[in-house]
Image (tube, rainbow, N blue to C red; front, side, top):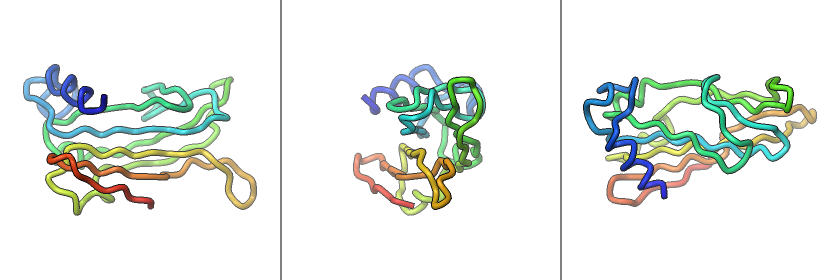
Length: 138
C-alpha cells in the first residue's frame, strides 16, 4: 500500500515540491498520528487527518528537498481547538540510512507526569531503496 502511494505520488509529481511536478519524486515523508481521544489531527495547519489511522504523505524530488522541511502536527478537539502540538523536521533520525526512500514519523497523544496532554514522536521508520530499514524510538 505504501509503496503504491509513493508510485502514485511519483507518477503525478508533487505540486509545490522541488521540481513542481515536472520531475518524479524519489523520497516520501509520511506523518502518522495516534490520538484516539482527539476528534482529528492537523499537519502544518492545513492537512486534516483522522485522529487514528490516517497518514499524510508528501513526495519530494530529492532527499535534499525534503531535508529543508519542518512543520507542526496537532491534535484537535471536537470544537477545533488544539489539544496538543509537536514540531517535526525531516532527516535527523534517519541520517545513517542511505539511500533513503521514505521516512515515517509516528506521533502519539498522551499525558505527561502532570496529566497534561502532549503529542510526542513515538517511532521513526527509515526505509532504504532496497526495502530494508530501521525503526527508531526517539
